Image (cartoon, rainbow, N blue to C red):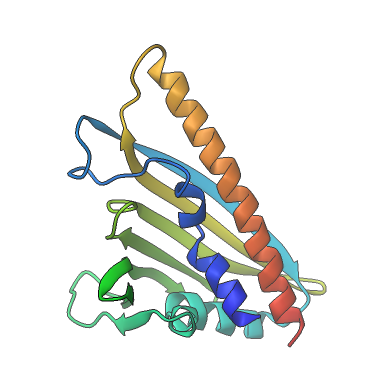
Length: 197
């Protein structure tokens, strides 16, 4: 079960963006434009807030889930901009880097059970994509509400032809809907995992 949830969490943005032409500024001929996507997801979990907090913090902020899926995770120690710490995540196969990113913790609020990350993606086709995400818990009558707010910025080729603004709006709408469906699925799997403990 844990590995399955990991794969879904790892693909939080990647699974959606894989169907689109995301690219780094220097990897595509022609002009690029940076666009943003915003997603929010939440779910009620019948489990103590302390247990949920410890699990999501360890697995996401400190990288435990990535390790269990074959990634090499190194704590960031030599970057003065990683004031609260962070992780360097890398997945290799046959000597080739398939996925590399750096996630820096930008907030760790133990009292309010909230943490935030800034992730930078370093390998094609997602090179240049950045994601700001906040994870937080709110106590409920029967447990806790687990919430996630994610803000992604990506580069795509500048639309050509008539009405480029509508093309961009349609692109963002489609990508955001796909990401939302995926986030909702991830939340349901997280709930199932935690409530089974």
